[in-house]
Length: 228
Image 1 (cartoon, helix red, strand yellow):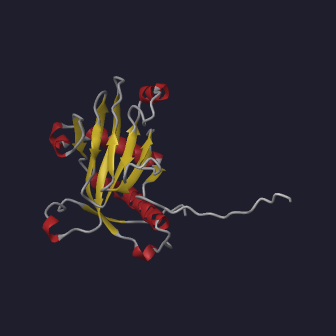
Image 2 (cartoon, rainbow, N blue to C red):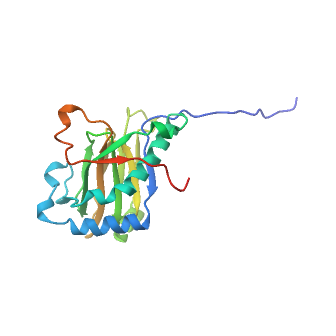
Image 3 (cartoon, rainbow, N blue to C red):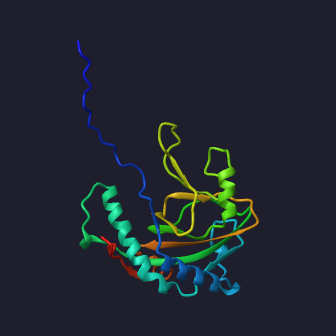
């Protein structure tokens, strides 16, 4: 009897939240970094409103100038989300978003963000300046977690047969977009340096009771990636 290999076709179910990773453009990165440094003033302190154990966190002084870039990126996320759900992308069904908050983090050694979530529709984080000392820490790390300065996402029950967390080691111009309800955290690092990142929240529908909260929010019309 001759052994005959059978051909097996298979598929894997898409499961869990849609988390998008991309690299922002150099122009967008430059503008964000310039405005981040200009917004580093006592009057714009935002740390009391955030979960992080980070001393220096500030609102942006002019968040509306970033809307053209954020609009295009959110259009890409919307397309990816439809594919994540195994649905055909329909540009006519794209949502309208409100940029409800935008802030910059100047994270130093021993500081961290504990596991937390946000209240809006989507959240995002962009890494503007990741010092090489943090990368060296990560390369020297022997543990099984994400290591120093890592960004982690948590979801689902802790069964060892399931993937319930993702951990990444951010580099310059990395951007991560995810549903605001997904718990996430940032591990501390130990080098005497400062890492600069930007975070924001986006809403796509505003209930009447929340209108006052969103008075200063800016509306974003999402755009499909112009390179498509």
